[in-house]
Image (cartoon, rainbow, N blue to C red; front, side, top):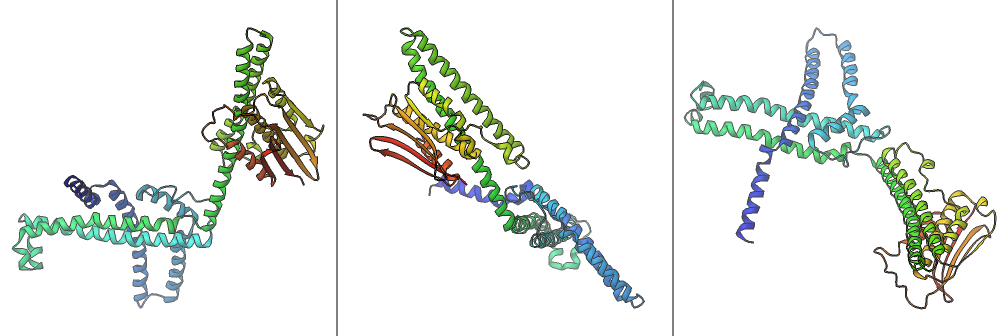
Length: 431
């Protein structure tokens, strides 16, 4: 270890040791603890009053006993109340700098165990607050008296403590400083104990944690689904746009009509992608603004279905791909909306991959109902040479997204080479 490293380590240690004396967090914790000490003083004064009444022989014991019981119920009820627990959580975040992720806002009615944990925190707050407040009430007057005596003012107090102190003014000052320094260090110690106890006593119980994890998983699943929508719709549009732009560049002089058709296809693909993009971004904003109040039906992804499959195939044909579609009329009407939508997206992604990796090759699309399931198959001959299309970072997301779509509906997806063709086949169970 170098000398510079040693000095830096020493400075960090010194800053850590002096932090209770200079940190604003100590002051905030001190205010919080003094509040607890004041409340503890009120409880102590009330208890002392009843003890004094019981000690007086002239006091009617039965009446005082009933009054003490009623008072005990009244003063012991607040720590178990949900608003008091919520107030304690807000105070702990403010005065003890506990993160909101550690102590989230309470949701729903608290359980019995949660109420008892809240009462335990209330008691801990009052006990530590009473100790810090008592130290404050003792240390400040003591330090003041010692400092005054050190400067020759009213030494009678030190004489009572002993001749050794009476003849040592420097010791008086040192003792006064130590008495004052002990306060912030005691406050910092109480603050650390409270911070360590905050999550076990004020944090959500196991049921609330499970509910929060489930809600978070639902939010992540929804975001993942919307990301798949963007990947499929925008990826398809970009693939079609790229191929049509290349075709237009080749035909702009030799065949202006074909070039215009390619540009029209680009325009249509862009318009469709923009509609999907606006829809998904709107859903994301709505989910961020009102995730807890937005119903699931209002947060649907763009409502493409197998009814839109002919238009999708036409886009691919305009891009120069020979696509043969085998779709029975009325198939989409016989399907649940979710199944029709996910089947459309599977065909869209499979077509996009075929157009991108095997340009110019014919593609067959078959969608049929059989044996209580929807059977979707997209096949294209494998290219003679590897595709020259440069794979993008994160390649393979298309197949992964298709597998997730099918799996969410308890279906099955197979994708891979078969008999000289690349075949994507998905089964969606119905009923």
